[in-house]
Amino acid sequence: MECNKEKNLETCNCTYDPCSRKGICCQCIAYHRRMRELPACCFPKTAESTYDRSFDYFARLVQAGKV
Image 1 (cartoon, rainbow, N blue to C red):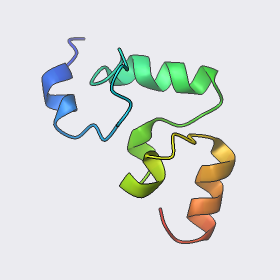
Image 2 (cartoon, one colour; image 1 turned 60 degrees about the horizontal axis):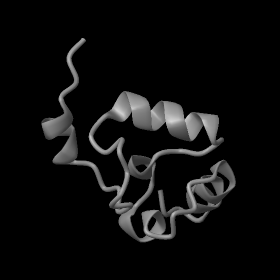
Image 3 (spheres, one colour; image 1 turned 180 degrees about the vertical axis):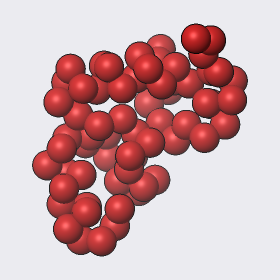
Image 4 (cartoon, rainbow, N blue to C red; image 1 turned 120 degrees about the vertical axis):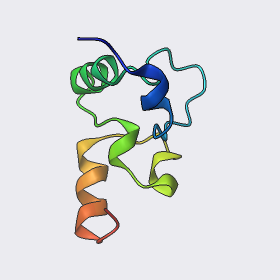
């Protein structure tokens, strides 16, 4: 399967500039899963910029109706 990195970058909302996985979704998801986190694309812009990608933070956002 060929990666569509350039197309993925069009919708990638990750603001962590030195990230080597930007646009390479399979690597991004695998990395964050190992860290017990979700990738940036699961969060709204204001929440993503906190860099708190934890499951707990995501659950709080869901409960607050922000996701």
